[in-house]
Length: 338
Image 1: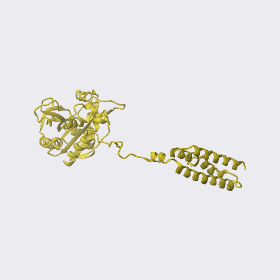
Image 2 (image 1 turned 90 degrees about the horizontal axis):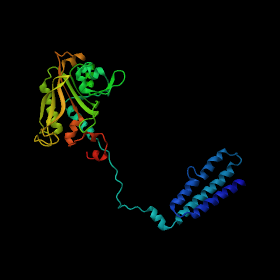
Image 3 (image 1 turned 180 degrees about the horizontal axis):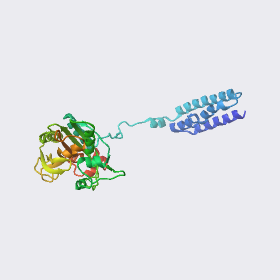
Image 4 (image 1 turned 60 degrees about the vertical axis):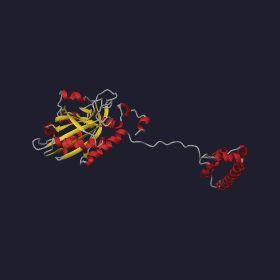
C-alpha cells in the first residue's frame, strides 16, 4: 500500500501544478518534468525491471494508469488555455525582415591564384606542390646560392633545426621535379612562402607565389616572352602590354623583371603605378646552367625558362588594393567586396 500512496501523491502534485499553469510553455514544462525522457514517471517505469518479480505486475499497472491519466489531463489543460494566450504563442509576423545569413566568399588571393593557375594549365603546364619546410640544399644551394654567398641576403628566411628552414620561394619544387624526371618539363608551383621582412603596406613575412618552369630542347627567350604576354592579357585584359627590364637572380641568366601596363591609368600615370604607367609583377629569366648541373641535366643539350610572381602583387593592381595588410586582417567588410 505504501507504493500506491506514493503514486497518489505524485498524481495530486501533478494535478496541482496543472491547475496553476496558464500557458502552453508551463504545460510543456510539466510534461517534460514527469513524462519526458528523464521524467519522474518515465524513470519509475524504467526501474520496474529491477523490482521483485512478484510486485512487477502491480507496480507496472499502477504506473501505466497514472501515465495515461496525466496525458489526458495535459491534453485537457492544453485545450483550456485562454484563446488569446494560444494565438499569441502561435502568431508569427511574416512581414518582418528575416535574419540575413551571410554566404561564404572566396578570398581575393584564392580567386587570383585559381585564375592564374587556370591560365597556365590551358597553356600546357601541370601543377606541382612541395613542402613549406625545406632544406638549405633545395632552397639555396641547388638554385646556385652556395653557403655564405651574398646572394642569400636577398632572401633572408626563418631557420629551424637540422638545417631546415621555411622556404623563401616555391623554386625548390622545380628542383624536386627535375630530379625525378627527364625533360621536357613544364610545371607551375603555387604555394605559401616566408621571408624575414617588415609587415607594412607592400611587404609581408608570409606571402604567396606561383613559379613556372619550362625545360626542353631549343627553349628560347622568345618562348618566355610569348608565354608571359599571353598570361598578362588573360589576367589584366587584351589591351595589356608587357616589358622586361634587366635584373639579377642567381638561378637565371639572363634575368629580368616583368612589368605590365597599368590597367587603371592606361600608362598615363597614377598613384597605383607610382606615376610610371607600369607595374612590376614578377621576375623571370633563362635557367642558369649551374642549376641544370645540380639536377643532372646537360646544359649543352637542354635550355629552359623560369618565372615567379607574388600573388599579392598581381591581386593588388587587379582590384585597386593599396595595402597588403588587408589580405591578412580577415576584416569581413573587406572580404565581402569580392
